[in-house]
Image (cartoon, rainbow, N blue to C red; front, side):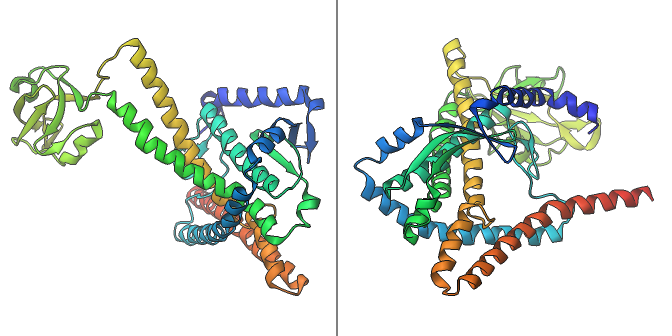
Length: 394
């Protein structure tokens, strides 16, 4: 992609982030700037909510937090295994980039899909609020001090935070510390499953129920479909024994051969045999003479259109909440120095290994190994692609 085409495709995304940077810059006195690229806006609003939520539920939340420690150990082992598998796969196909940053408005590396800008921002904010809020709720249940809450900007990436008194937390028993650390990623993974269930069993069926089952056809004059009695606007629900509910379902018919007859079933109950003719552009394939479209809404009134658009928007939002939330939860279990998984491992090693120097060295080794794996996952494909490109120039 050329620089000009890049600007043309992403102009609104770039303008959005430019406006965001300028907004933070001109209001920088209201933010606490850390490491030059992290802007924090601290408030007490979230603190009051956490206190109210936890009140009279301390024991229950403590039990859930302790159970979360064991889920955290499972999460650490699972995500580390997954990353090792990615590394093995990468060496088998070193030209494919498998790891990269996720930014609203930009494509997701290795997936071929774009993380939408507005829905991406909303989903990221909700996911981070769930993550940080869960840390705060479990910490408060164990009588830890919550200093502040607020919104954050990590460069152009939105976020939220709950500021816990770290000095006090580090003096607590191991199960208290690990409960607080595991709460965030566990909450992300559990809520991502809930989001997926809501998407699969509520939102998607509700939207699907508003659509006519089948595929709308238009016919080409003088070709087999029209000559057999298919009309413009007919909705097909089945061809032979193959259900047809979406345009892609036509692929399930396989190759249509010339002079073969297939039975079309319309939504109004008509059964129409259509004999395919020889396709003039490919004499080995048959041709019905139809164009395929997704079926319309059952009752396309103004109110139904608004409801359907809302359901479509919610379906996309809940997809990203489930997908990104699950991945953020797993990534936070990876031992990379400042992650929740790294802090859980640090507490565990200090408990199991009497020699604190050995415990620290083992912890550092695992963290450095994880960082090295990520560097390999990102840069080996880039270097391999660059080398292959240079070879074509020689």
